Image (cartoon, rainbow, N blue to C red; front, side, top):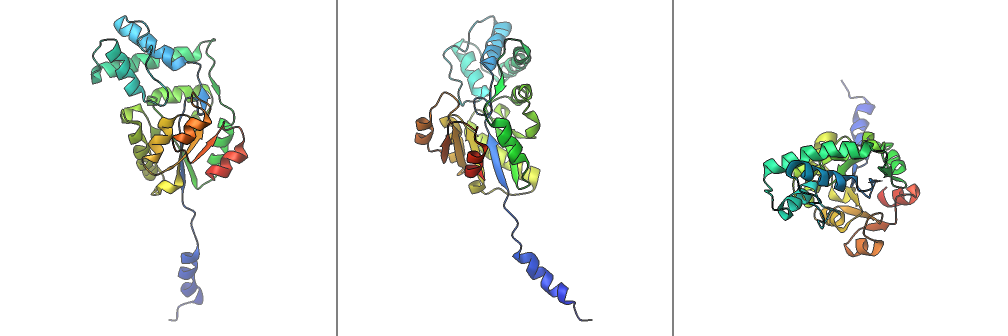
Length: 247
């Protein structure tokens, strides 16, 4: 039986169809998408005070762009305490309890930063785009903060302080998770890390990804450019401008 002409042409037609490559967008949380008014710092201080009776254990510890694991280890060490895995787990558990209270308190000034919800909505509307988190927060802490601002539903996975002390490793873990989640292998050229500190820029560049620096935290645009960001914006308020970079 002779093959139908359609049977001959269809494979060629299929081969000529270009399927758009998936793009992956990895967002930092604090001072990139939201501002919590110091709730995390207060919760960590309260956790150490509860467990060990030491006040202001994190005074002088750098927070911006670092993982909660590294921050907690530094706080424990500065206070002359054991920074073992057991101690970290105890502090983490107490921190989550205190963070829940802090975020629910009337004086907490948690809010979304300009444009954060709008850009996430825009990205979520594109089938070839996938969003994840690359944050130094403990996982439960990240989602508590995002939920307080109505942004938690935009994310199903991410890499967190549980994944390690070194923020660079979080991007690698995120790309692996995204591949399992979507069934796609992500070329680093199709990945964007979005954050407000040179640490965010560094962890993306370490894996060859694009990086968008957002000057909504303690670092200005010049510092983010000097860190090697692919692009820098003052904030995410102009959705069109952001998509002009990311899209």
